[in-house]
Length: 449
Image (tube, rainbow, N blue to C red; front, side, top):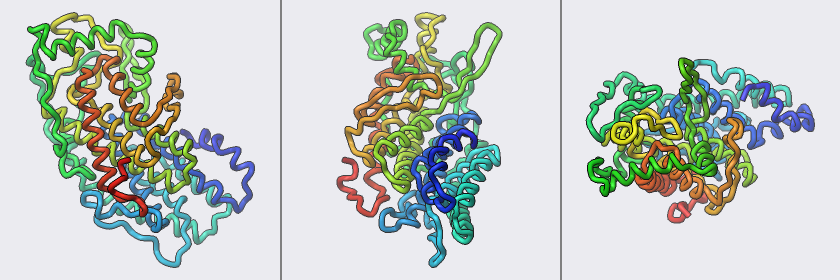
């Protein structure tokens, strides 16, 4: 969201505000969700794949949360000592007035910009936040103290982030493609190389290791026996894509979340962009927070908890993907049944088993259920800005379950893989919920609902 659009979104609020009403503006929880959307746009604009996108959102939201924990110690508990290797986060200096909501916004932007390139991508938006504070009466000493505290927390989180092995994986050995039956190879139309084959080496947050939740062995590749479980899965995908209803197409499109789709028409090629899977869940958090009418600190808490679950879920999933390197349905069908067959959605460039979207969605659903409760009905309008009509759900878990079918209807996953992935994501999400004490009144024995 550009600064201009952002200003239009809060215009009604500004019209009713006096020059000393900075709290009414800056403490509005919708402002934090708008700020997340701004980073979401930057991530999308720079073609970040979903795995890296989860890291973009993670550190920004943890930094924002730590400011809330420092400002509201009777409500929230620091994640220092709870997340792997996070030792300490600066506390607010005693006796200095700080607007913690403002500091939280600045911290989110500063870390979002530091993790996301290009440098300066959040500068205009951050400047607009500072202008709001100054133009609407924030005392000068409070402004300066808030900026300083945001800088201190940001520096601590940024230093911690540098130990997650991300930089080292940038120069790790490339994935070797071995074209044998059952093994992953690049898929059309982009035929891109394997994406992030070393992501399992990234430091998890709550999990002890990337393989803490080992997945069952994938189905054995067998296209010679039409009665084999594997062949039945292949035929199920082929038949489903060839007979999709309008509703099934909508489900597939709604959960597509392809951050960069290569469109090919004759000799013409062009890309289209949407939010990636973790970006989609950023929007869902904002929708839920607005419907529940929670305040600013609770909104920040919901984002942070969800992003922790998303981050560890991708690490768990990517460990499985490159442990087994299984072939995509498109490749199997093209080689053994129909060379012209194409899935409804574009196949992403990494192995099939397990399903990343199903894993991260079910993990996010567990985190959000712990915040807002089960049977929290909502309408997801995340995709309307991409021309896809909204969908309604009875709960976050209901949405995650639909995602299973979405990847199957799209022709990019076997349904067997999605079912297992949902189970894995639930385990990751439940671990996050059970291990972390983020609220002072949280009962760890019942936090998972």
